[in-house]
Image (tube, rainbow, N blue to C red):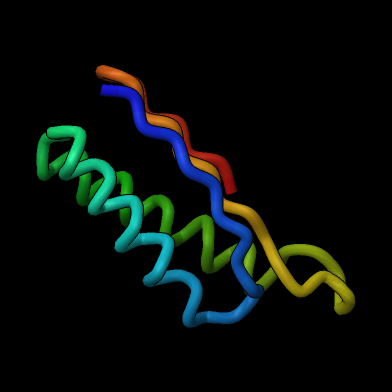
Length: 78
């Protein structure tokens, strides 16, 4: 199964759990091992939190999260 999605999120703390829940749901649907789901969701949360806190300048109001799952491959970009 191949799944791909991309989100544009506001640079605010409330966006972090949204991205994490979407990734977890996607990985569970794709049948990814629960331990791997947890590890990747923690990594995504950290990356999103960094984007919210440190990303862009004062005029940058959003950031993007993209996930691609295909077989044994999972690529996440923040």
